[in-house]
Length: 111
Image (cartoon, rainbow, N blue to C red; front, side):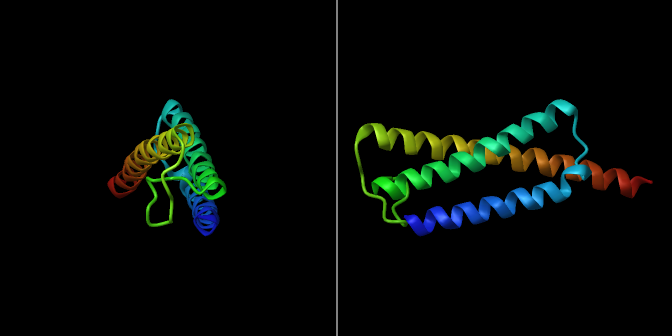
């Protein structure tokens, strides 16, 4: 689980760097840009926190490949909530970013 936590941190960092590189090219309203920013921040830190908690406690039945065992209700609930909520956040982020980048690409091909 500790290796998984390390890899999550590295992959989240790479995701943030790549997103930062294309951020100025997204054709989104100010509200969607702010929402996307905060969803990305929550998603990346919730991802790291969920895996670190699972690594420290050894619990995390939602991550059976990483070796998570079923633990106490409170920790399982916290890890499960973080994993589900971050998945929904990152799915929303990917859809919003793709829509914004598609609008940018379409605008430049129309010119």
